[in-house]
Image 1 (cartoon, rainbow, N blue to C red):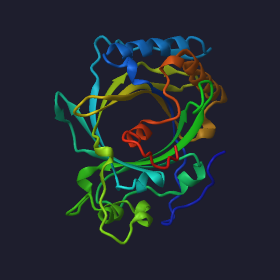
Image 2: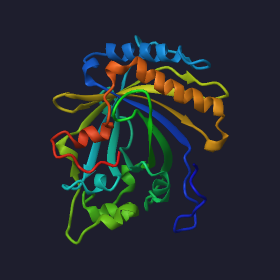
Image 3: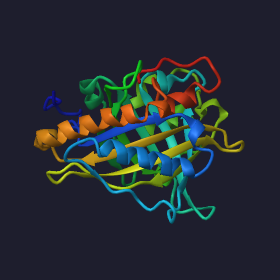
Length: 295
């Protein structure tokens, strides 16, 4: 069911879902070398071959170079942001060992309740550009392959240079730029810190496009998350994303094919699946005492 036509406090209409992400979290065991990317690309090809009307065009990974990103998750010591469905991270893209642009801040509210996610205004108060995304994210069921569950993610992305303040780790300073979290600021001078003291290195490999017909073609990729320093591999993630203006305009046949492919992929890749979590969830649980998860 689509979100209702409601407005934010300033009169702007609430954002509507315009992206669909299908995500499969993968065990780290297969990604000791780049060969794991090729092996899973073959699995995607096998699954696509079982769905009528779906075509996957594998990329030539022998000549491909993975992209590298550094991802820093920030939260209070008591995980107050994540416990309330917020995620705050900073990411840097690197090429040949050097950053390629201004670091990006990614701020999101992610929850299974679509209407609640839509109602959270994630727009920042900054003197600079930003962009928002409202995504429906499909994940396998927590107890086994063969189905899917949906999370809704309301994202805002903007350059780090747009955030001003003497101490950008101060929660009050952050709340001025991100008013959506103002209600989480306490009376004390609180700070955010690196979640579980772990900096994430993301290795991102683009795979081939997936054509669902009726004009819907999606890109696909595998991202590998490992802790920077010891290069401990946390997990992999295969994902493909579709963009549309309105969900109701997506042809029913395309929806059926996307759902069937997602289920077939799980069945073919059963031994690869890491169920019941997300990449962010794994990071938060690295050192035990997991926070309250809304994912």
